[in-house]
Length: 196
Image (cartoon, rainbow, N blue to C red; front, side):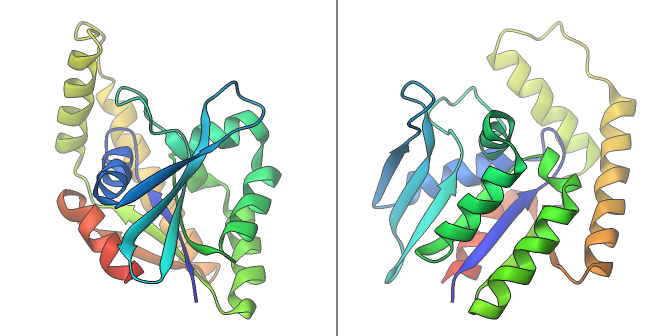
């Protein structure tokens, strides 16, 4: 049995940080080149984190300043491509993907659930429990690193996004998807525990 884990949360919730932490702790994180994107990775095959099983991470995590690793793949190729990619990768090991926009593509997730569960796999929607205040602090820190400290943070937008994620989680539960809330500060450890 393999898991597909969709790491969810709003801007600044720590999704990319959690995935990067897992990749850094892998014995080997082999880059899977994207044949259409001039040397950018489509993802990674991480070994040594889970005994007898590889973990496939979808998205570009080469650049520490870049965020939305998995979302970047969806923007490049579209939702049907991501569906096919996840459906194929789960046959070879566990799969991790993160991205803010994925939270709203419920039809794809429901369809993926319908095709992988009968084959003995599992889909988990993992929502980080990052507070609005912590997200604002994370956004501010990221902007400082990018030398964009003077760019204002739209607090109302951060709050609205949090409400939207809560609403989407209720919708996904009603659709029969497994939704778990993950402590943001230990997200990579919790997710790794599920994979073991």
